[in-house]
Image (tube, rainbow, N blue to C red; front, side):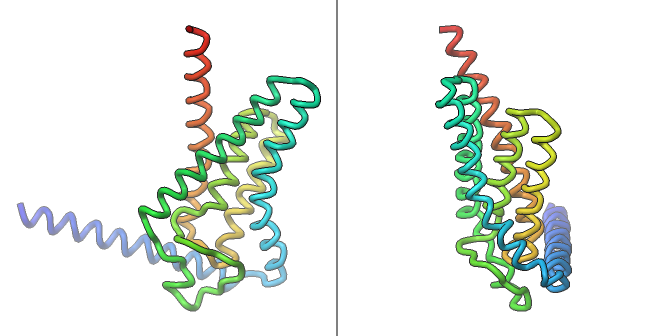
Length: 198
């Protein structure tokens, strides 16, 4: 029995070590071999997450308010709720996992932007993907979906380019953001169904 637990521990330890090596090696490749001419561009991309994620639901709600369109206002609230759910889950996970930033653990990683708190998952990526996914679910047209996800992917990539997140942080952030939008959609659908039955 003890042998089985030892083998299980060994497998988990080796897979963790292997995955950590892939994580940091990928980040080194992105951060240390980056095109430095794009540093400024990726700083703008990384900072755009808050403007877009707050701006999109605000603009939508304003349009709905001006046109007295309840449907547009509901769509705006859905996007805003998705971002809020994503933010809540991301903060909870950061405080639970408590993973150090890559530039803390690996001094060779060049930190090119401010970054506070813990690393896993990427909050910028999570919020960007929550915005892109909820907006794409609200307006399922290619000319909304393509630029939304291109922007969200660029935000995620910028976090690695700028040396403040591991690739696994970014992947986790993308999954949490998209998952938050889907979860919010399901909760809203359940609430609306319940209201109709009352």
